[in-house]
Length: 480
Image 1 (tube, rainbow, N blue to C red):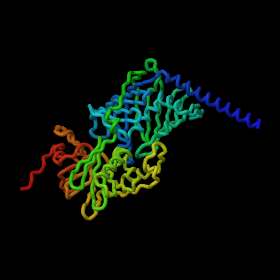
Image 2: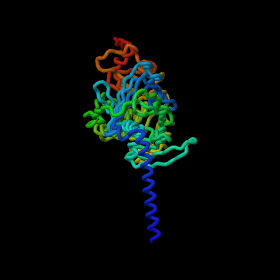
Image 3: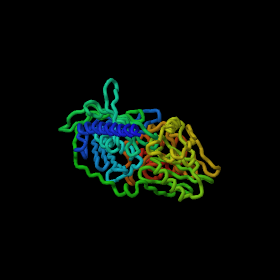
């Protein structure tokens, strides 16, 4: 018993020593970054970024933009971040047009600022929180808060301090510090609604003194194995004033859902920036588009049940694989709904299915079910003998190789995403027609379909004449 007691005490001493050593290592790195004195932080840079999940096909790289300026502000005391960015698309349209973007996260709320509007982006909370906890200062704060383990490893001939932790069960982080107590690389994983536990590798380049603040001069990042950021840092500021407040609509109604009857048995289900369409068949229902995330799909399915309480959803039509349009399809799959998509998307979805979903597991991951896909090429018809839903690939649309639209012949209704997004009511048509919209009208003519009404999955329900006006065409004269 005495030997066992001595051994147990020795183990406690060793564990305490290791814990103290780990804390000492963390403290040295934190002191080098002046973490305890840094409550807020700001950097500005320029370079190149790539839009995650927005490639022209699942096999292509994320589309590139030139970043004229990016100013990112962190408030570590509230878990908040604000990005103000000016960029110019290099590979998506309209090429060269300057775009201003403001994205924000605070705690469990995310939103974008567009003019005076505050648009909820709840499906991007994990991604934006991840940016905070993988920044050099954020890593160290999260390491202390989450009882990080600290080890020494020899990597490419250099001894590195490896800091590992799981942040609130939502993110896994391995950070690598060099012998100068500088964070050089961060490997991390966060729960993504499409890709599952998405791996991110962030490289921090040579550190230099920015008016008394040490910070890397370069940030290079990869997500899902592809580049997403290459930024040169031009200015840094410690402890700038920051006041990020969650807007009331984001706090109280982050997943807005409204429905509008477009015709008998057809509803336009809107909410924020992304919409869906509901089509009633004889014995079942079809939903076109499951965007964003589980939360959005759950809210839409609840609205569907109110509109048509006695029929199941049999099919979900996915227009294309872009993450904002496919983030909610897994929730439908968890309910046994068949996912209809273009054949070009299937390999990516099946690859994503085998990814782990340990961080923010969704309904499908918890259900243990396997999704059922039904793919199409140029066209497909879903029919019950009384109503038919015609699905067509939109040829010549460079937004996505496999983008599809739905057409209801009897009602002369077209449902489409990203091919035509109407401007505000009464706004002047664009001076230069959007080529996606030009391609949509060309496909309507090619297929010889008669369209009276468009249900865009962004924007508002409009008559077909608005598409014609947007591309500088006049409606054909009515037959006498």
